[in-house]
Figure (spheres, each protein chain N blue to C red):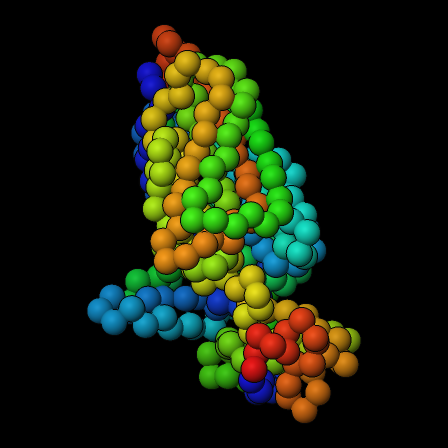
Length: 225
Length: 119
């Protein structure tokens, strides 16, 4: 079974809050949910939950250098249907959250490789390469930011899923297809209307479920029965 | 650009709805209990409903002020902790800054890095 995109949802606080709740709908078998989050202070992340289940960090939140934090968490086998994502911090900040779900993902140890980067880059195009994908047919998910408010379009090898323009200019994109063969892979974004201000990246590749593995939905039914 | 001072009313909780036709965002204050229930298992069943609007998200632990819907808006500020909390955009587009007492004078932000942006 190969990975497929399911759904993506974004929300942001109006101003400062210590917690943000929004709904995200998940479907499919062998599911994985990612939540890319950004907040504008040195507040620490208390938790990110989906239907009251705590997500696992892809990486610890990045200190982006300007007082902001950027984090990405994931959850294997999130509950299907519409459920609530809750991002909770240690204190008030402007919070943006983008939830993205996929089917066909490895249900054991799904994260293949991770790359992070902080610092301002400018230009009408923006490319980030992850050099060491290990497992064939992974997908890549990319949480980044363009804060000049440019119109963002996807470049080669990339599909844009969400663009946020209220607070930080967050973007979540992915490879839109399996990465094969494994190895280096470059994601690309384009800024329209002028040079973009690109800032802070978390890129994770995640593995497909192994051939012959039972879908997670069937395993759950066997457990109940 | 001048800021308007509002009265800080403590920690707040709000539901945000979007008007299905106009896109207007409407905030309805709620209790802490109403908010925290949304994050419990199957809490989505308690997601709020407002006729003519679609619930978009809810916020907990907000900086509540004396605006009718309690929400502190852009170019407003309140006394907060040992200084101020102000809502405005900086060079990176973000909202919501905690500022010291010396950083707002006569309702104007006087931090050097912000002066040219706000004027």
